[in-house]
Image (cartoon, rainbow, N blue to C red; front, side, top):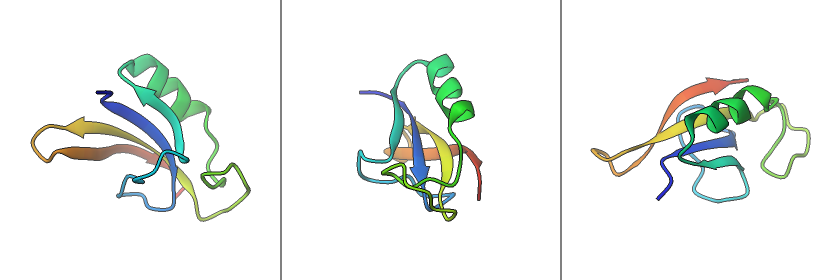
Length: 75
């Protein structure tokens, strides 16, 4: 299972449940960080302009059994 994901999201605290929003999904911190820094806020999950969307980087948390947002931008 991959433990890092970068998404376009309308929420700065909740990780999207779908796959359309993914910009990165894997275990490589450097690739995830690069995807996060390269992504511009203001686009929805289908890459259409939408100012309500930002970008989040989330890490899997074994304790909660879910992804937890660690970094966010554009909110």
